[in-house]
Length: 92
Image (tube, rainbow, N blue to C red; front, side):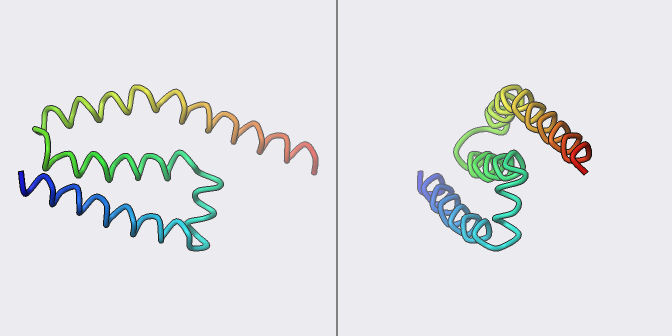
């Protein structure tokens, strides 16, 4: 039980650090222009912390569920990004 609590504390501290990084110039650009990357990294932090709480197989299933749900959203973001770039080229 104690290592599970320590895992959650580590997750909280690493998430705080991640939030600070996202407040930097590069972090803000990344969060604005590539939101999906920021989300995937955040999910990765959570999945890593789950390794202390759940079995590796359980974490694998959770990761798979996030991937199955996230792939369509990331694809949508990438398609919109490409469409916006094409529109910007047409304006020039």
